[in-house]
Length: 363
Image (cartoon, rainbow, N blue to C red):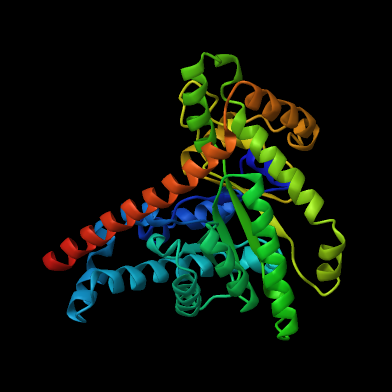
């Protein structure tokens, strides 16, 4: 096992791989990563599956779907839930040994449902039932419509990975939705000790957009700092809300914390250190879901020096004030990033549907 990845785990960070494919499952690659690289979970999204389903390993399954007369959407549902189910089984030991905290595999509702609360709730239930594993997490975007869905899906006893969070303000509403969902679950006599959640705070995309605006106004000295500051302020909110009186009451009834998850942690700017959004976001109870390239870079040369979040929270507040003084409207940045995030996943989903339609015709 990599000493650096082991050290990262010992510092309180759960390493989740931001990728899944039948290639990884059938080749034994994912099993090896669990054994040798401290990988404790997996996240997926429409972009990941759009890439994965191009593999010839899916040809027999696609042929079977064609034989059954399945539509592209049905074939995608069947193939992706099978991959997630098999991944959940690989992580069964991690899930058991961590008492349900890790060993999690996430699958996302269709991105074009991001602004439809009722349809999101319905599909979350369908995905949960189809995968049929306790350690699955259903990914729901933190749009306004998504917030209501997060509350209701949690209330049903389903573990949720809340995705596409860009602002601390929206993150607070995500926590409120989780608390409300747990309270409803308790009222309905659901065992809340089985409900887990993570709140996926997107990191690198923040620097990409902010740095573009800083270049436009001639403030290069502020570049490549916004994403870390934003993520550290999110962690501060996590600490505050999960030590509140409302949370203490829920915890007394066996509720589990919703952990902050650092997502989009591969650097977009090649001038930046390739482990920046890993080594600078270390603290207890953090999940970092990273592309394999970022994970391997961390294993090779990432310097893990302990908690790099809480000592930097005060300076993060100062930086965000400096950013505002420089004329950067951070609220506008995060609103744009949420909108673009949903749109990008819809594009990936449409590409996935088109490629599966083509594959079904050729099968």
